[in-house]
Image (cartoon, rainbow, N blue to C red; front, side, top):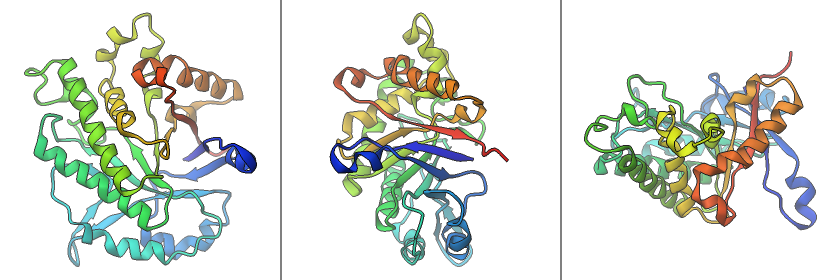
Length: 291
């Protein structure tokens, strides 16, 4: 899988370079820091501007702590990840200018109202930002998809206390957690890029309905717009947010990409009160390479 990443536009002499699309390689075959070092030469021969990689903390000689499993209440130590940072610092990149560490919304077994559990998740995001900055990476690739059943972090119906708290109460709490995450991330890495496989594009069908707000609780990722709003509550102008629009790997024509771009920049903005304040997200595209 490849991400087509459109950079933010920058006025002046850098404008032409900033509009150049970037190809970011990512998929289930993502390399870790060790494999990246071993295969960097051959990997950089491919037409990519960067890669997304897996990072594992090393608890002891045998036990590992995958960074991607950040949505857990387990206590992590930053020193577990120092060996990976040293390995990444040793990489002598020639072609890869836009690299990312990977964070998933898994296992997703922490309730939004669990303060101590979210203290741990926020700390995990801080570690991810620290790794990205110390390694000279562009930022974090975030995958919001639930892979660990029965958990689904962004689905109200899957929350353990959904019978106790209303959808509106969960929505407000998800927005709070998004703020907490962003504050920690930018505290470590103020110029970070957060690239997500999808942001509000995942709820595009609901955004196009006659009454999006009424439709939202029925969607699979109904709490995700609140989490993104929390990001926007705390994000400084130095941060870049990218909606990867993962569904685009099914597209077969430029028209479909353009229609999706219009939808994300248009109807999907209904999910965020920040849209009227000039906030927005950059648009990427995921597609399978043509063989």
